[in-house]
Amino acid sequence: MSQPPPSYPTPSGYPPAPPPRPQKYRPSWAWFLVGGGLIVVGLAAGVALFIWTLAAFFTTDASVPADGQPHTVTVDTDGDRMLWRDEDVFDPGCRIVDTATGEEIRLRPVTSQFSRDTGDGDRVAAYRFDPGSGELEVTCTLQSDASGDPDWTMGWGKVEIGPAPSVGGFVGGLVATIAVPALFGLFGLATLIVTGVLWATRPARPKS
Image (tube, rainbow, N blue to C red; front, side, top):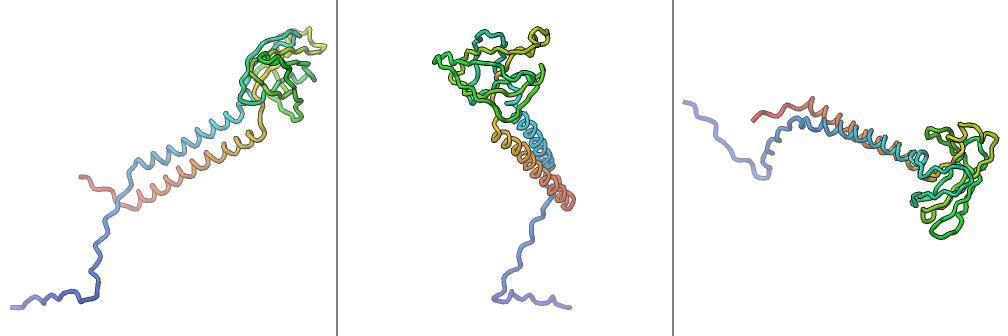
């Protein structure tokens, strides 16, 4: 009757065999939602940043008739304000006084070309000024041959005051509008690709 071969101990100086590696399974399907969510967040952030960048061009703090009479208005004090005139009027002839101090506010002519349309015709930036306390008395008198025209009375014969656009802020906003969605989109796309590869190459997790 044959005997089993004798077992010999591991020779001294040799390490024991490493344990088998644990089986790796597919990642959770929730990672697909994470990747898709990052892309959606990037798109939403891009839209929000684009609107924020252009907000200064379309925000109006006050609208004042150019009838030669003083009008009291309240504007925000978070930065310089800009006075917008109708594109057909060269000089709206405005005088602005800070009612809190009684001092006349210096109007600085705008040398760059800024224009906007908020629904009542094209307007061009005329002056930039420091709003002071924000409580202002504005007096404007427009000189034009069209002053008797009904359209002039309804829309052209007034000026608008709103936030002054900043070139640096505008450029920074555009950069952020491009960079932030791109970063979120790249992270989201990378998450989807890695999850898809692992999902296709690994076995499903056994059901307990």
